[in-house]
Structures are given as structure tokens and as C-alpha cells.
Image (spheres, rainbow, N blue to C red):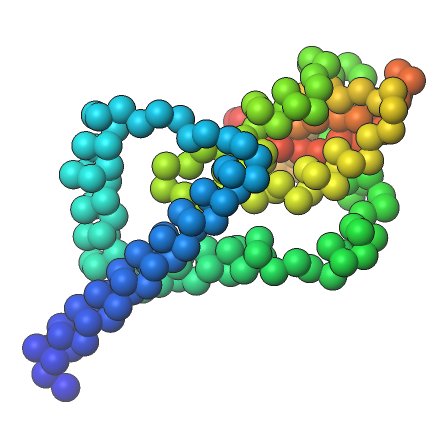
Length: 206
């Protein structure tokens, strides 16, 4: 097979991958608009400069990257489509009313179970959802509280009983490699006792 033929096939595959990415982007944007409508959320106003940057710099550079590195772009596209299907197709736990969620979320990560001295601030559910609502200009994540972790958050928050409190926490831990890892998230407290927590972010320091 001649180099010219190989180059033609490579460019054809890259263009096909780019078209698939554009279709997936349109589907994701449509679903994000539906999510905003369900939650009565309004996207942040976009400035003229922001729109100009997206149209003249970000979009062309992204398209060029897909064309030049289409195998990597194809892999990322497959991963995004898989996550999109996971969001739209309910799993078995949804039909059972989250029957698989019986233990505290971080039981398997006992080193990060929030303690009372890890608590930072008491918050309401509405305040947490407003704080953690994802706004992604590239529509890679749904515009929901905690983005792709929204179902986990909903199941966690639905366990709240009257009188329970929600607190933000920062829980440090020294890993087996000697590095400091800090988990940030939200804990459920009842009568002064921390019951469980949901990790929203993990950072590692040297």
C-alpha cells in the first residue's frame, strides 16, 4: 500500500472521527439543556470575548487535534459515549430504589471516614447543590450537582432524616507511599455523631 493511500485513509478516518465527535457534542449539549430545564438552572452569561475565544481558538484547535491525533480522539469519544450511556440508561440499582446502597458510602475507605474534627462548615442541601453544580463550557459533564456523581449525591442526600445535618469536611490521610492525601466532601451528622460521608474531591500533596 502506497504512502499516498495510507495518508488518504488516515485523513478519512480522522474526518469520520471528527464528525462523530461533533454529533456526540450536539447530543451532550441537548441533554445538558434538558438538565438545566429540569433543575430550573440558567447557564452563566457568556461574554462577547468568551464567545470569540470559543469560536476562533478553542473549537478550531480541538478539531485540529482530533484530525491529527484521531486514534486518541476516537478512544476519548468512546469513553464519553460510554459515560453518556451510563447517565441515560438506568442501572439495576435504580429500579430497586437504590437497593445496593445500604452501607455508608466510604466504608471501604475507612481511612477517609470523616471525623468530627474534619468538619468545616454546616450547609443545607440546597446550598451544597448550588455550590457543586457543574458548569462545563465543553459540555463534557452534565450541568447537575456533582456532575457525573449526581446519582450518588441524590442517593446520599435522600438518606437524610429530619434533624440530620450536612457538613463539609476535609479529611487528611498519609498514604502508603508517604504522600499526604486530602479528601473533601460532605458528611451526614445525627445528634452530634458523624454517620457517613460522600467524597467530592481528592487532592494529593507531596
